[in-house]
Length: 92
Image (cartoon, rainbow, N blue to C red; front, side, top):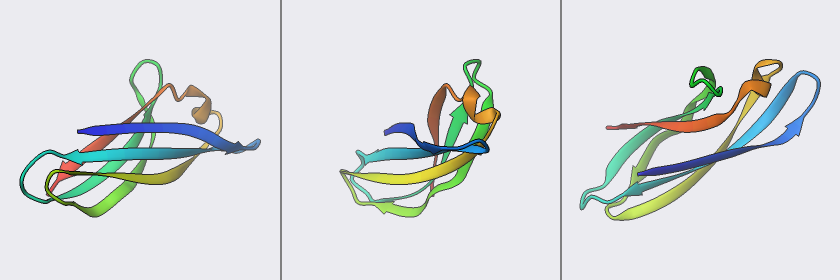
């Protein structure tokens, strides 16, 4: 299971700095290796930009949760179109 959120923490005439927070939960009885991308979408569900290397090679112990943070700089004018954020999770 995942929970992801983001907010703009800095901006100028060229870009907005989006800081994201991602919580991953492992309900299984085995540890899992995880890679994620954090994706930014417009109101119609089209991908605006992504942090392709959001979380890389993380090991979640059995029956645990962990929160990760990161940031993505998205240039204008595209950044104004961000309406939602999702995490793309790959288990290894």
